[in-house]
Amino acid sequence: MNFQLINGHFNAKEALEIITQMVHVKIKFQESKIQHASNEEDVKMREGRIKQLQKDLYEIRKEIELKPKVIEIHSEISIGK
Image (cartoon, rainbow, N blue to C red):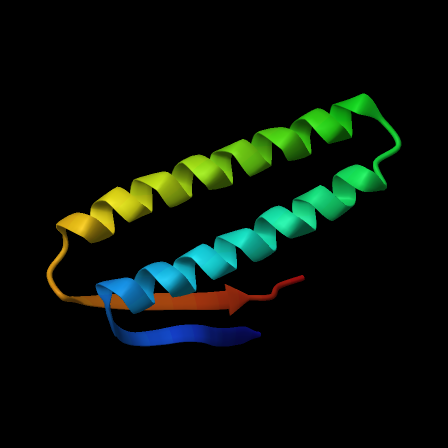
């Protein structure tokens, strides 16, 4: 099953806002899992994922600053077995 989450053209400010909010949701999810983690290995893995998300957001911010006024974003969720 596929779910089209985002499919459109946005100005740079809107695009950055959408992407930032999505990344923040993923970070909050990882943080909530850390609070309930039972082992150190799981915590370290999730902390690493948070750092990667923060790095990716920084990189996309730089990229958006270099882009034209309109940015095309496509995001699809694919759920498989």
